Length: 94
Image 1: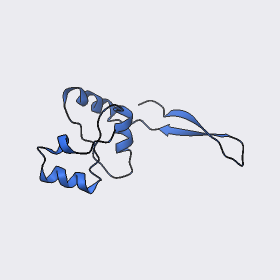
Image 2: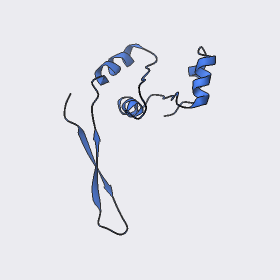
Image 3: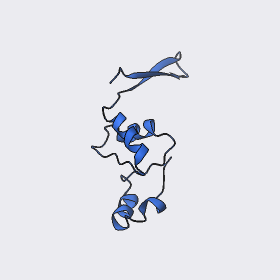
């Protein structure tokens, strides 16, 4: 795992001079495995505790893939009640 990636973003404030804010990405050990799995499987599921980077990791690794969050009660209910049709009728967030 390499050092965190730093991407400078300029923030302009009307009362002060422009400042630079760094968004730091902390690479996850699971990233290479997710990328390998995605090449051979139609669906990749990332689960874990809330606010730990699950969604950010997915969006960073797979920016052009469809994304469904089961945090939304309607999506979670649909997946539970009709798992066979869930991916085709779910609202996909891209």
